[in-house]
Length: 115
Image (cartoon, rainbow, N blue to C red; front, side):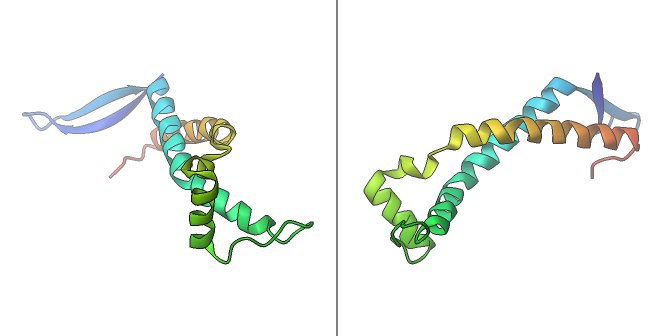
């Protein structure tokens, strides 16, 4: 299964279409999902730490986002901001890849083009 992409016009003015295999589209979607998860994960760790402080006997350690980020980095190292990244990627990557393929296939089915 291939997805056609319009790639411009040739010297005669005829439209050129390039076929993109679905597996490539899946891979690009998965890569985009991994990149997005990796870039957003430190903020997710900070959010979770801020949410659980003061609950069920957990001490209140941080006053704001920047205090939390610097506190984690100083006490546990920068790697602590990426705790749980593996499982988060396992949960995110397949869905993002499938969503990307679905988007591209629906554009093709509805005969819509990217601008």
